[in-house]
Length: 386
Image 1 (tube, rainbow, N blue to C red):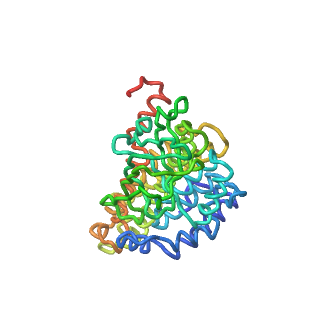
Image 2 (image 1 turned 90 degrees about the horizontal axis):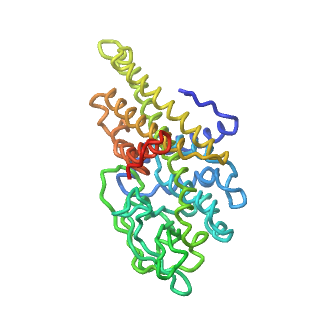
Image 3 (image 1 turned 90 degrees about the vertical axis):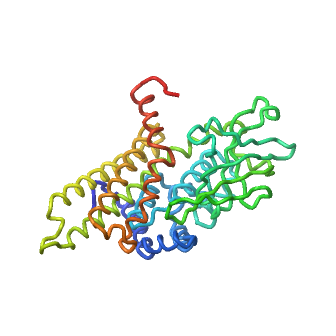
């Protein structure tokens, strides 16, 4: 199924390169690593060696010099082969985009080449127990200590923190110390820093990317751990949040393609009373509707990525793409499981174990309700609800 997306020659080469690597590993590798808790280091390194993890990052820092549109293909194609990697949305996309837009040349040189090559990863530490969707309410503090910064607080549901060399931490500047520079700031904090501890969160997710609570107990970092200027972190965050939404949509689109493709194959092969079950409209029509939904989401995602790459305001398009993609993927996966009947729950068919990571996309990285709030307020001009 080629779908409605028409790849340029360059995009086709990116897609084929990802598919070639993903085929070597596949969903069975992903599921096995997810269940055992092992990392997907071989796959990650191979993607990095092929230049695919940094395809959207600047050439002068080891990237491919392309755009978000190209990285959308990488994330989608991996998921379309049954390998939806949350860390791909986090390290190269969110953290890589923020560093590209706001870090010093020295910090870019220190981190971007390794992020692009797959040599090191960086996790995104924004969410807190009492500040989920409300980034303005972050309570982790950063205090200037004369030579650097001391960070105190905690973060919640930080994906893949145990795989990463550093965290990109959002913290509130201590107002007494910062004075006019009070506000949110962003810091790169090594995960082996003294006073930083990770506590696993037990979830129903079947994914190699685990979730953690992060405790920062007077963690000291040097002055150059700060990204850009102090107090400017909220604005800096937006360099990563739109790519985050677009890449989450790409991951969902890949899952939708994977599920619809497997269901279609099964519906052609599975016969009841000498008739393929796909000949029955009770099977065919829901699968056709799933295909339409997924292709619509892919078009919305491509549009959002193109807006972002052109430097235009991509906020509305990114939110819409993430919304429709998450809904389409979950419906497509549910219909694929239903098409397989009892086999839909058997691990060998590679569907049911994707349920929770796909369901997560309705809630993260931004919930469907917060997207509806955004559209109601900014697109429709309705009164603010909060």
